[in-house]
Length: 87
Image (cartoon, rainbow, N blue to C red; front, side, top):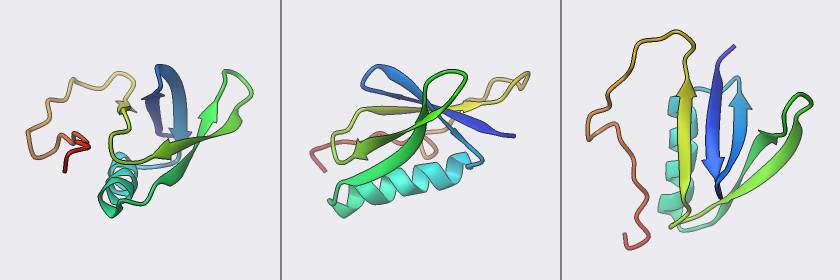
């Protein structure tokens, strides 16, 4: 099972059974639409609880593609997404 870690507001959250590409597309759509959107994630350790993160322009969010025992990946500028609230 794949897992994506998210850091939002300095706190860790996780998502399971999602691809990195689909998550990036969802966040990009929320930011570029100009309409805030809620992202459902897992919170807690052991027994997960739903948490909802508000995604909008200027939101600081980090996505970590967890790949146990995988080689390091270096992203090109085209693969790196940086949300800029001035756009």
